[in-house]
Each structure stands twice: as C-alpha cells, then as structure tokens.
Amino acid sequence: MIDVNHLSKDYLLKKKAPGLKGALKGLIHPQFEVIHAVRDLSFHIDEGEIVGFIGPNGAGKSTTIKMMSGILTPTEGSVRINGENITEHRKTVVRNIGVVFGQRSQLNWDLRLGETFELLKHIYEIDPIDYENTLEVMDGILGIRELIDKPVRQMSLGQRVKGDLTASMLHSPSVLFLDEPTIGLDVSSKFALRRFIKEINQIRKTTVILTTHDLGDIKELCERLIIINHGVMMEDGKLSQIVDRIAPYKTLVAEYYDEQAPEHEKCEMTFHEGNIAKYRFMKKDITAAELIADLSRQKEIKDVSIEEAGIDDIIKIAYGSGSIL
Amino acid sequence: MKKYLYIIKTQIIKSMTYEFNVYGNIVMQTIIMITSSYFWKALYRNQNSAAGVNAEDMLTYIIMSSVLSVLLITNVERRIEQSVGKGTVATDMMKPVNLFGVYFAEDIGSILALVFQNMLPILLIGSLLIKVPVMKDSGDLPLFLLSVLLSFLINWLIAALFGMIAFTAVNISALIQVKKHLIRLLSGSIIPIWFFPESVSKVLSALPFIYIYQLPLSIYIGRGSRAEHLAQLQIQFVWLLILAGVFVAVQRQVTRKVMVQGG
Image (cartoon, rainbow over all chains, first blue to last red; front, side):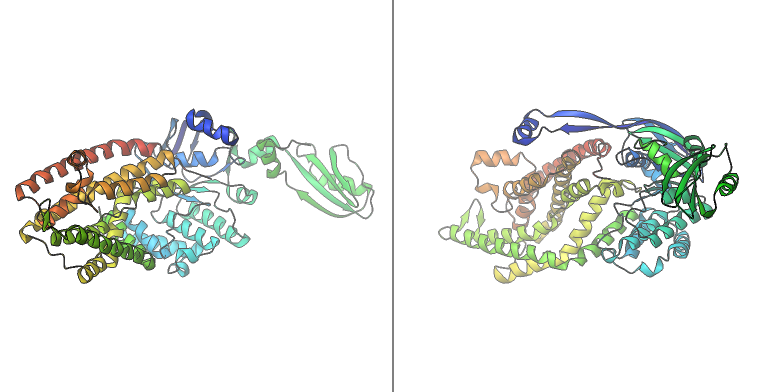
C-alpha cells in the first residue's frame, strides 16, 4: 500500500547573526546551515491500517506527511503509494489520497461550502452518483448537509474541520492523511472526528495516517504507532506492544480511611499524600486483584482505581522529557 | 480541461463576492484617462499631427489603453506570493491539477468578471467624458483581436515568471510593484514610445513590453500600414514563444522547490 524508503529531507536555513550588523552581514555574505528535518525513514503501511504518527513539535511529522502526500519533494528516498512513486507521478497518485491539515483549510474562504465541494467534484472528475453517495455517508457521520449553504468565512473552527474532512473524502481516496486534525477542537467535535475516522476506516477500508498530540486520539484510534523525534524513527509497532515494552506497569490508586498506608514488597509506592497512596506494579509480578487483596488484609481500603500503564509515560519517554520513576 | 473551465466559473463567483473592490480601478482609470487627455490636448494645440498621429487618434489611444488595461490585470504573482507566504500552497499541491493551470484559470475567471464590472464602465466613462473611441479601419479588427490575445498571453507569462521568484524568495511585493510600473512605462500604455528619442525607442522595440500595449493600440488607431502590423505581429508571436519556452523550463524546477511555511 504505502512504502516509504530511506526518506530524508534537508532544509537550508539562512543563519542570521543578531543585530543590525548581523543583518547586513547576512545580506552581503549569507551563511547557510543545513537542517535535517527527516533522516532516513523507512516503513510500510498496509491497506486499512490506522497509524498514529507522533513526536514532539518540530520532530519532522508534518514534513513526513507532506512528502508522503506529494506536497514536498524529498531530498533523498522515495514514497510509493500502490507501487507508484509520488514525486514522479504526483498528479495521478494524489487522486488516491486525501489530506487534511488541522491548521490550514483547503476550503475556499469566499465561497459557500457547497461551492467548494462542486469545484472539487470537477477537479477530481468525480462521478455524480459517487459524489452524492459520499455526501450521503458524510452527512450520516458529520451532519454536513446543514452546513452546505453556509459561507466558509462564517463557519466556526469545528464546522470548518467537518467541511475539510468531507472535502478530503469526496473523491473516495484510499489513503487519508490527517495532520493534527483535532487541534483546537472542543470535546464534542473531537468525538465526531474520531467517529468519522473509525467509520471511514470500517466502511471504506480507508487507510488513515494521522499526526496528533492528543493522547485521547491515540488511545481511541491507533492500532499502530510510529514515534519520531529529531527526524529519526524511535518506535514503530503496535500500541499495546510498545506499552508493554517501554512501560510494562500499572498504577493502583488506593484511598484509606486515615493517613497510614501499608507497603507491599512486589510494588513500589510512588505517591503518598493524605489518605491517598499510589502503587506502581509490574504486570508480570502481581495482578491487580492480588495486590488489592494483600493491601486490604493489612489496612481497610475505602476506594481503589487502576491507572493503565500509560501512553502518557510512553510519550514522555519517547520525547525524552521524562523517565520511568 | 473541464476542471479548469470549472475553476474559471468558480473564480467568477468569487470575484462577485467583493464587488466594492472593483470600483477603485474604475476611478483610477477615469483619472488617468482625463488627465492624459488634457495632456495630449495641450501638446497638440499648435500642430495637427505628431509622429503620424493626430490628436483625435491619440485620445482614442488613451481610452483604449485604459480599457485594455483591465484585460491585463494579473493576480498570479500575488497568488503565488500569498500561498507560499501563508503555506496554503500545500492545499494546491495536493490536488490532481497543474498548479499554473489553476492560476491561469483563476486569472481568466477574474478578468471575465471584470469585463462587466470594470471594462464596460471604463469604456462608457471614456466615451461620455472624452470621445467615442471608434476603430480607424474596422477591417483591422481580426488583426487587433489577435494582437490583444497575444498581448494578454505575453503579459500573463511575464507575471507568472515574476511570481515564480516567490517560490524561493517568499516576499516579492516590492518586485511586483517594480514590474507593474516597468510594464506601464515601457509598454507605451501612457506615452507611446514613438515619442521617445530614437535610441531609447530602438532599445524598447527590442523588448517584449511594447507588444503588450502599443502594438494592439497602434492597430486600433491605424498607425502604420497593414504590412507593418503583420511584421510586428510576427515579432509579438516570437516573444510569446520565447516566454512560453522559459516558462515551461522554469516551472518544473520551481515546483520541486516548493517550501511550505509553518506547521
């Protein structure tokens, strides 16, 4: 489906010395610095997968998405979608892909939403029956028809994202790229978006590649994660496997009737304040039920909850800003 | 092809959104027409003809120059600059279209809208306030229309080539102004270059600019013989071929260099 081979992208950045003197110097004798935004990425994505592309700001996620969707030309390496090289056959390959950027809309500010759709219908030469069918499906998921006569400039962000999602699906692409689609959305719009991704993935077998900073998106949607940092691949695998490998623990939160909390030899107390104590335990050492049983034998427990070994922790570790305590 | 026609149609709809915008150009062209009509009337006070053109023909020339200027409004430079500057070039690149085909279709759409919003009002105002600009020899009409078509294409290609600079330089607003005034002054749109010293006019004849305004307008007012016009049309066509050649060579290079700002 999608083959990414040794993909790299370098930018030339003009070095600017501070101050007026530096500005003059840069004008006469500019110095350039090579930035390696993406370095030697290789991976393969199968049809029907939902892949989460995560990494801190400036990690090279968007650059990779832009190269995969034919917008930027790679410095080295290639992207093949259904066997065709996107740089060489951009105009034919892009018929098969849809792209949504959370931060920039492809909708036309001066037109009503429906007019943009009509324009896209002609640009992609979409069959009128397919077009109506897709609109019908999108109306079912996103309720798009009530927005169709609204000028885009009068839309809220949430409405605009719905419009952008529909616009990207009109030509029934087999691959959908979503670059931070949930950015700035309220909770209900976020839910609508997640439902949209799940449904098009199920109904149309659309392959979805999304970048996000929203942990909820990742938990809800992604079976597979690709984590990159500084343009280099850090992790690639099933979400659950990455969790098991990097953070194979759970945390038990117990509330007692007073401030004394018992210890347990098979786990570590990571937090104790007031009546509440947190225990971190390895899944292979002890089960949650055993731990609760052991603890309540020592002290009466008022309430318990279990924090699933966290994707948050994985992100922290992968982003290099935290470590397992 | 059909998709580009639809882009033209959409652009016409878009152009109708901001009707107020277009009145400014009518006012400006009216001022240009009236002031230059005073200018030429003063110059011709003591003589019937200069450089083979009489006062009446010169007035026709300036009115038609303003009318023609509407056809020669291009947005492609600013379009490229804005889409590179804001990063929206990404949304153009992800569609199965030729980027410059889209820009061309958009400019055609804007101009078609302007024919009614701008060109006809300017023609009407010129006719009422100065004179009715009648063509000297209506037999030249096909030749005139052909030269207008070629001048439109030459003008658009020059604009697109300037716009391409934005793909690497990002900010070219000053350059766009320079280009605009260069064309206005060197193309004979305000003062025909036959009034310039011979050496200057020879240099300008060797550049493509006079084939944008002066050639079609000369045909319109019947300055020069048909044989001369045909010879100049050939040069105009050669310029079109040269610019088209440069354009095709550069555009492929340039789209590979696309930068997307932000995000």
